[in-house]
Length: 221
Image (cartoon, rainbow, N blue to C red; front, side):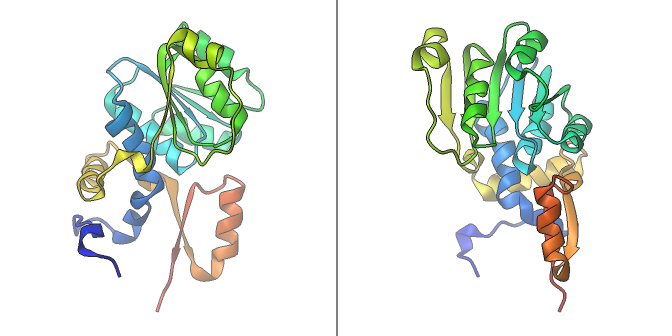
């Protein structure tokens, strides 16, 4: 049960079971790009962490026409999916010098970053790999982070901002995402795998290991 203002009306021709994840992680990633960062056509954006939030940010960056969309993760399966969804480059954080590679790909650093992992070392990477005046949006739940404010932020006029739920008005933004999905421009169904309720432990395990990005449990009466 929810209050009327929290209910979102969606097209009846789209499977309602598929739309549940739009209410949290997916609107967070897509909204951070489309509602807050609003990258210009031809700009560069790096996504740190290719879970549901990060992959949604990648799909949104493709919609905006970013020239460089760089995905960072430690699971090769998720990096492969990131490429399928629009990433132009994919880097494995365990093996690649992420900051150096981003600077090479973008000729000096990215203009935008979306940090979804909440890992302090990765938060610092998201700042260090920006070009001057670049912006890093922090959307992952992040503990205390130690920064060299002069070198990581101030000296090159960089910005670090926090974004909650993609700065979205759900009753406006979720129907927009559904419309993008119906047009084939936001294939978020590729993130989702359905499990019967009896498979709940397997769903958690698959999510932990990176096998499934967004498990959805179906409860049958």
